[in-house]
Amino acid sequence: MFNRNKLRAKILEAGLTVKDIAIRLKKNEATIYRKMNNGEFTRAEMQELLNILNLDVKTFNEIFFT
Image (cartoon, rainbow, N blue to C red):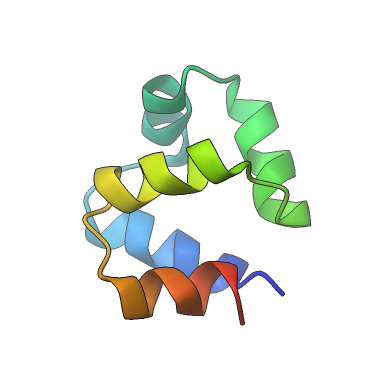
């Protein structure tokens, strides 16, 4: 299960927007919203989000695997 609210909170904590994330992932903003609604991030995208948001392993797991 994917925790969309926690991901959104971490994006905001980092001072970023979904548009910023889309730019860094080289995706369309609408695509990122869709992925956030469905939890359909690829492994590479999850790894990039880990780096962009400076997530620790516990938080990463709480977002993508709870």
